[in-house]
Amino acid sequence: MRRERGKLSSLNWKLVLMAGVFQILTLIFDQTVIQYEERNRELNFNLLSETEQRSAYMTMASRVGNFSSSFDDINQIIMASNFTKDRKKYLFYTILFDQTRLIQDIFRDRSVIRKFSNKTIKAENLDELAKLGLDGLNKKGGPEITYDTYDYVSFFFRLVERSFDITDLIDDEPNATFELDAGRIKGDPILILQYKTEYNNFYLHDLNDDLIDASRSSEKKIDNINKNISSIQSKKQIMLLSGVAFQLLSLLCLLILFRNILSLTKAVTK
Picture 1 (cartoon, one colour):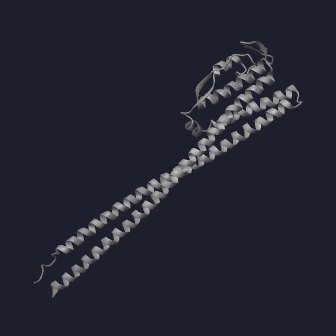
Picture 2 (cartoon, rainbow, N blue to C red; picture 1 turned 90 degrees about the horizontal axis):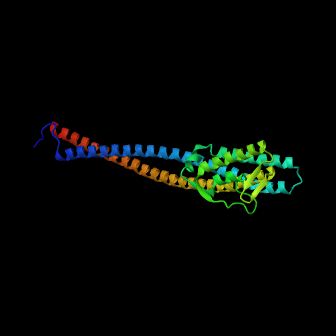
Picture 3 (cartoon, one colour; picture 1 turned 90 degrees about the vertical axis):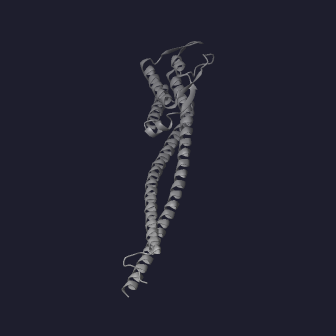
């Protein structure tokens, strides 16, 4: 018994359906691969940014660490030397301005400000230090300094301001007198500058430690990003292979369908 011309069997209709389903699955996997590619590009961008940031933190930490370590040695050399008072004063002036420039350079970087924007630091009460004139590093018997908690970034900017205030005060009144609870003492510019540089350097050591911690934090982020990139690459490969497999299955179904149609055509023409 002959079939009607153009009529497909149930099997052929199933082959058409399966070919369509496999083609749809191929498109789905292709779109998934595209999404993985977008995510991969985003992660690679983050990886580049974080790598540069880690490098910047490490460079800053090295700069601060070298400066603060060198200062400890230079300070001892200056005070133990036979330099004239003017020479010692000049050297401490230079160190103090180098400290302020270093702090300004570090906190000029917006990424550093963002990194430490929510961080606080416990330090001597700056308002009381300003009243003392010697930043609290006074003779024995002076008033006891209290401690307060400050915004991290603002505190270092205030260190810079206080440094400039000290130098301006010494320039305007080289023999200024500072009132303490223990009495009145005559300001020694060299002693004041030494105290101020030592005070700043103490917190530069803290800054160095925090920058090292920031670089370690970036390193952990880099490790996580690399793991995510590796995971996405593996998933993308699976999606690509799955898409190719379903594409081949779709073509196989079509080939079988065409063979059946040809066989049907030959049967009808006989």
